[in-house]
Every structure is written in structure tokens, then in C-alpha cells.
Image 1 (cartoon, rainbow over the protein chains, first blue to last red):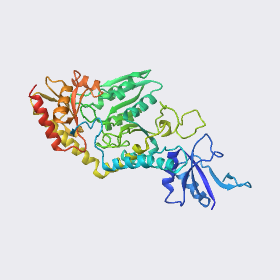
Image 2: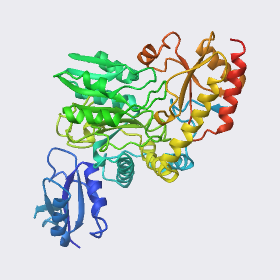
Image 3: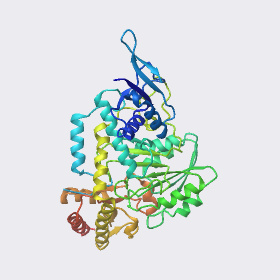
Image 4: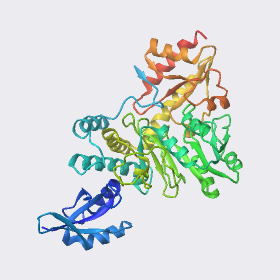
Length: 86
Length: 378
């Protein structure tokens, strides 16, 4: 199963967004944004199945999220997790 | 013991609040927004549930515009000190609590016009409008006097603020949970509320709603769990005003408190409290040598009644009520001296009995009997 992350920022914004979409998108969760992709320090992201990236982006726009930064989770040749913008 | 000091804090809490506090203290004394683990995530979600419950309760569009504080005093300090960084002219009423008066007194470059109520204990909105100056930037009004229980016409005041483009800060410490509040209908830009009084939530809870149109400078800065690489405080709500660890079990339990009030109905609570207060008011008026203050129109009052017995110091009355009759009331100035100055009770203050949801007629009858006995010595 492939996953992706949408950076949502503050924990309040993230949880609000999660609550608003959890009946529309299956298997979503809140995670801390990985260090390699966060900007400005600690933030939170929504983790979801990659196949829903388009829907998530649309929902994020309709919920008024200003920046839509989505990253695909993948593994490099060394088996380390990496995040690729999509 | 009969508890009639609900204007200070509600002693008795709904069973769902106690259950929630107990459960969450045992299972979820975790830090919201401070990590990605289950407990932190769950704490964040429970706090958001409380924000959403309160947002719906006060008709606030965006739950994230509510910052939790320890009490209404902290909320008022955040609003006043945060808004008046550049000074300006402020209008407030003489009925304000010291949690408004003291921050205003201390803030530099601020001039303040204090509008007095009439004899009934109610401020005329026209007098507030007349006090507006070209540099008036903030109008502050308590929703109900914590001394006299008089409900102020904040909807009309909110309309005046809107018409003049002035920010309106309402202090709902005495009304949140017992008198209906609608920030949109009342044009409230900032609403300070306590969670532990009329909302019947845990001690150490309160909050501040700040409209998206109002810019505050955070008075307290620190860890928010967000944008940690920056030395600047986040500029978005609620992180801007929520530095440091929140009391997760207490804040989260406000959801249960709001749900309880919604299930009972705020109109029922208001009617219950004011009908008991009216019984008390009318009964006190019939006791010789007792003076009861402010309007007898109970459509303009909440559950708080202030009185004095001629010739007996208010503190002595409350002591006797406590020690001899087992009745808890408060005496003195109730942290609102300016209110006493304009209502003629500045020489010693008043005895204040404040009714809550869990009081009943028997409580009022016992207080009236006790006061009539004490008044015989007057």
C-alpha cells in the first residue's frame, strides 16, 4: 500500500481537516510532519493512501487550506523512507 | 451546606464533567500538539472537540479562533494587553471587573472613558456611543455585572461598535452557560469566558474567542508545538495565544459541560436561575432593614443578587451565614470596586448571593430565613 502526506500545519488545523474529511476518505491519520519536508519547524500532516491524493487536494482547497503540499512516501535504494512532491 | 456563590465558581459540576475529568486524568494526561504518538494525538482531538462544542455554543464560525486559558481573567488580559499595544482610547463600563480595570489602568498610552450605569445597574448604550472619540479603538462591556447581576445590552453595544468600526470585547464570565450568547448576532469581536462558572466545567478553564478581523499581539510567548525553528510566536490562532501545556483533562471536559447545558437547555437554565433569584430578591425586599440593589426587572438580570443589612457589615453577615446557618455567600467588593462606587455600595460592599443550576427553592427559603434572623439584630 502506498501512502502520501498533506502538510496541514498546526495540530488544530490538521485535526479540523481530518474531522471534515474522515467520512469521505478512508484510512486517514494524523502524523507529525517528517523533518525532511517540514518548513519552519514542527507541524502536522494528514497521511492517506496515495490513490486519494487528487481528492485530498480538492478537499483541502475547498476547506480553505492556502498551501497544498502533498508528498508521496517511498523508499530509496537503501531502504530509507523518502518523500517526493506530487 | 448551601452553596450560593456560583458567580465565583460553580461548586457542583454535572456528573458527565466529573466522569470525564476522572477518566481523562487517568487515561489522557497527555500534551496536545507535542508529538505524533497516540496520546498526544488523542489529547489534541479532545481539545478540538471542546473548541468545536464551544464554537457551536457561541455561534463562532471557526473553532480555531478560540484559545483556551486558565480563566476569564487571563483571557481578558490577553485581549486587552494584546490589542492595545499601540495605545488608543478605550470605553468600558463602571461595572467591569478588575480583570478589565487593572489591565486598562496599567496599559501605557491608553486613555479610558468609564461609562456609569443608571440606578438600575444597567448601562445605556447611547451613553457609550456618546463617549466615542476619533481614536476610540476598543469598547469593553461585561455581559452581566458580577456584583449586581444586571445583564447589559451587549447586542445594542455590539451594533454601535460595528457602525463605528470599533472592536468590541465582551466579558462573559458571568453569563457563559446561563445566558444565551451569539457572537455574530451580538457583533462581538472578542469574547472572554470562564469555563468553571455557568458552563459548569472544571476549575482552571476559560477561553478567548478572537475574530479573524482582530489582530492581537501575544502577551505570553513560548512553546506551541508549531514552527519551532522560529523565534517568533506563531501568528495564527489558537497557537498564537496558547503557549505551554494545556490542562487536557479539564479543557476536554468542557465538551461534556457544553453537551450537558445543551441537553438541559440554556433557556431552562436561565429561567431556573432567574426565577430563584427573583424569589430571593422579592423575599429580601420584604425583610426590614435589608436593602437589595439594582433593577427588579428579572428579564434584565441573571442569578446574582446583592444586598446589605442596615448597620451590619457585609462580611459579618456572610460569616454568620457560613458559621451559623451553613450558607456560602460572598461579601465585600467582589473585585469590582468601581461598580460599587456608582451604585452607592462603596462603603463596605455588599453581600452577594448567586444562584446556580443546582440550587432550588429550599435553598432560597433557608437563606431568607437566615437573613431575617440576622436582620433582627440590625
